[in-house]
Length: 101
Image (cartoon, rainbow, N blue to C red):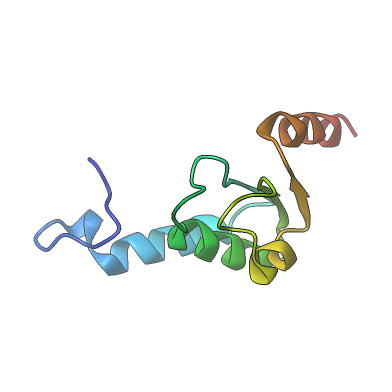
């Protein structure tokens, strides 16, 4: 099933409320939250921004991969992310080191 930015009537798993409540539930159950903004440099991902904010709000360790020239370079994103990296490889290296400690 493909989930879209807007809910689909008649499909209980794909309504606006279902999408939002499922994402909120998932974001509040994590210890570490990684968001990768490298693929979306021309259009803001509202869902990813919301998920980052929700994870940050519950005290998860938040990590953002966000290149310098990216539309997600915004004070709210930079503050909601405890750590930010330019590349996914850097973030994955950090997570590997974190898991070894």
